[in-house]
Length: 428
Image (cartoon, rainbow, N blue to C red):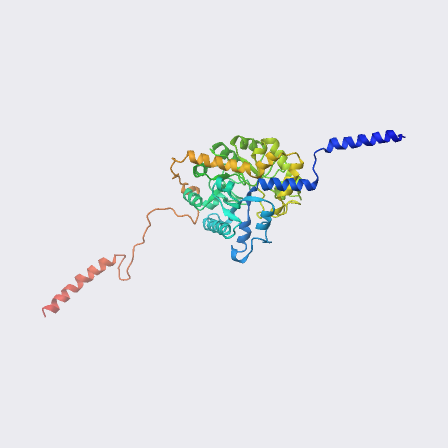
């Protein structure tokens, strides 16, 4: 048995050990305060949000909804403000089933919706440059196109989307385009033996570099991703993808491509969807943080961002159910000894650095004329695509024609038949 003195010494040792182990570890309440202060100083830029898709289900009728407290989506303005969101990349997405049909028109309608939304609400502001995203005191709206099928294999359409404010495009969604391959097997569009990029696909990459558009490789196949990373002069992004090592889903990024991304100077923005975080199971904040830890180990914190995919999927981790919950993730990463400097990068600075570099590459190419490369008609041939050539006008036929002779010939014959009769009448 311990003596009273010995027991006192034992208790003192336990207290000392406790203080050594937990020295400097803040309470949950101080985590919250520290987290919100950090996010207030570095407002989050999220790489992918599909609110526009949800609004399309309401027939794009902004007049019929209140975006401050909209409850039919994970995203509304009050939640964004509560989570200190400073910028959101909104996807102008149309279904793969619109490919070879009216994808361009539908994409224009989604761009129109995002622009109207960001004009209508004073808390939002359309942004088209890194400087605008950096300097605004509102929630910056950056427009992206999700899926290269939206340009209908036309560099001219790509340029016009840029004029309308689009600053990012993912090369594929869940379907191949005639010039790039998807990671998905959902659709049978443009299956071919050659994987990756075609020559026209390379021209798309080059033109996006010239324009200063962010190239997004989320949804692309590994072969396409490798070719783009080797070709692009500017850094690229995976706007809403996670770690393949942690969850071996085809939408996630394996370590060898992460190393290529690091060399490229680009960014992977972590997706929160359960299917990509927990491989279909029910994830939580810790599950998402595991992806961040692995990505940090492989390529460094300076190449990581957040691309939640809210409103583009169903099934999100416990504790990260909507856009108001971002602070829970930042608090978890702080508890895992991520530094404030690293998290400032994750929140916004890493994305702004990449966007700055994309614009810098654009500026070096300012004397490069717009590309006039056109996809070979045979590669994008479909019933809705017209090959430009002089039209064939059918020969007009007259009911009075005989044996296929032209009406002019019939009139001539009639003239010579009537002429003798006319002569006889004049001289009768």
